[in-house]
Amino acid sequence: AEAADPRHSGAKVARLAQLAASGHAVPKGFVVTTAAFSAFIEESPVGREIGGTIRIAESANSEQTLREAATAIAALGETVTLPDAIAAALRHGYEQLCLAERRVDLPVAVRSSATGEDAKDASFAGQYESLLGMRSVDAVAQAVVQCWLSLFNERALLYRQRAGLSFADTPMAVAVMTLVEARAAGVAFSEHPVKRTSDRVVIEGTFGFGEALVQGIVTPDHAELDKADLRILDYQIGEKTQVSILDAALGRVVERPMPDTFRTARVLDDEELQALAQTVRRLEEEAGHAVDVEWVLPVGRQPGQPIAVVQLRPITGKPANEAPSKPTWSPRRYASKYGVKKRTGRGSA
Image (cartoon, rainbow, N blue to C red):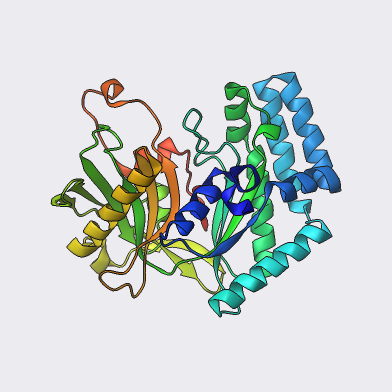
């Protein structure tokens, strides 16, 4: 019940919980709730120091003071340990998820989910941390802390100030989800993300995990399908110079040079494209508005089997009649929209 309530789990996790309940293919997982974050801020010595620093900075209403606070909190991050009760609950959650997946060292994605994040009137997407490939209790705990602390990075602090919000208005939940072994991954839109026309589904994809794509460091394949009958109207093969893979030795997802034979190879076949477009169309119908989807094509998927949905957002921004006269589309535009910078082993929030 908590996972489906955005007050406890944040908008991102709440939407995924609703999708899972509706029968969509969503990775298994659990949520570290906003109550745990509040307990960390109120009960741990470092948390109290962080809370005090931010309250002073927010009351000063100065961008320079907020920047200094962000720097100070980033330095504190190295000293953070979880309160015992939260650490014990996190250990139990990870061990139970491992048991459910029948894998001792299950790799997981640790994703931020702040309340208010991805709201239609104030998109926080991409400002907070997510990390992929954690495969131990200690690594997951460290990743949870990094997600929490991303609430206080400079970009997030300045954004909230300009929006008239306090960190108390957007407490941070964190999702810990099974990391789907990705043959391919990417993003899809139920309307054109630049032209804002609603008759097409637009799909971008690359081999491996999708982090190289959302970080804007690879040119993915680009496809457009007719939303009504799922005809493939356009398919452009991108030159995919980087690939995000799970490095078992490091225990995280990293970027590596794409093998030459894959750089100009087609990522998605017709069945996969139409299955994705059908999924996106259904998600839009259920949501009642245009959606932006992050998807993963699992290794070994057979025709007719589902494609995993790992994030769903409402499409925000200017309507079609305010778009530039000559719209352009690129992965860097996507990365810029969500404020994503290249970070080894990390993804957009």
